[in-house]
Amino acid sequence: MDSHNEDAVSPAFLYPLCGPVLKTKHIQAARQAGEEPAAEASFLQHTLHLEDSHIAAATEAVASAGVETFSLFVKFHKVAGSTWRQYVDEITGEGSLCSGDCGFPGWPCYQSSRSKLEYELCPRPKSSWCPKRPKTCTFHGSLGVIYQAIDGQNLTVANSSDLAGVRNLWPDSKRFWLLHRVEWARKWLPQNMFNLQRSRILITTVLRDPVERIRSYYYYQNPRGISHEQFLAFLNFRRDYVAGNWTIEGFETQAATPKGASTFSILHRSCCEYETWLGHGSVEKAKITLATQFDLVGITERMSESLVSLGKLYGLTADEMAVIGQGVPRDKDNSDTKLDWTDEEKALATYIANKSTQVYNFANEIFVRQYLVLFNNEENLKNAVERFEAMNP
Image (cartoon, rainbow, N blue to C red; front, side, top):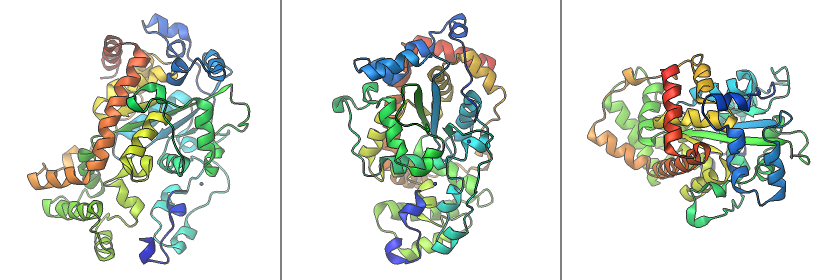
């Protein structure tokens, strides 16, 4: 769009700029619940890179109360991300205003700015609402963080023949420095980047079947636009967009519809989020980003398994996660507003989601590898899920 409109917001604008210490959970509680504590099992990168002396030192510090935990939850749209976010906020003790700041509280406004004038009108808060310096980022600004962090970077993998393998996860210090490239993310990253031995970073996300995500996004955004004709118009433009056949006229036409995509950043929410934010449009780079940067990649369709894995990562038992879950509202479910798929709609959505589906399929692979490291075997995971669901049906 930039090449057609001098006032269009540049990518630098579209993809740009609080909290208590992690709640300490005793390893003994995990043993009493019949689990091997996540701290002793070690976090993924520490488990598998002990030959590196500085990582070994960090491993020894994982169970120490003096270790500061910094958290980044990369929050996509319509993936049950609000549920995941609330679990992370509760685990870390960070209030939603603080965790949602991400160092750039005006980020959502920037995403919908169509011109420099609109950009200038976006809010620029002078101070944070947080009572203390934050250590987490769990709202949609996290997408901008990961996008800018990997921009122009060669993300090396330890084993390219086994991309889903957890050995490819970068050590904490290396990931800290990658995130530090994003100036506005420094608001919640460690203040001293030259003494990271007692700091750890946990990066998580959750992905959903992208075909269903497209439909859910449309009906969530258009609760009154319930007709197959309108949904088809929505899909047809996105088909043209991913096929490279879109026009400015077509973009402006759909932008004028109720809840239309007013910017390309908003457009990507409805069709192409995974490859856009994780790979700058490249499926392969998106896969490498997941493999090298994420401690845990959850799957919406396997939410209970994903949540107990999240708890394990942070050193919490399934029982403790269930207690947290009892206070977490259910994510917004718009199933009642959706019409059943028609064959034409499903075919269009499948075509549109081709790249995202490849990323999602890889996410399923990497999730299995990650939870097997966290729980040692499928049976332990199954037992944890049963306890979690029994307490939090």
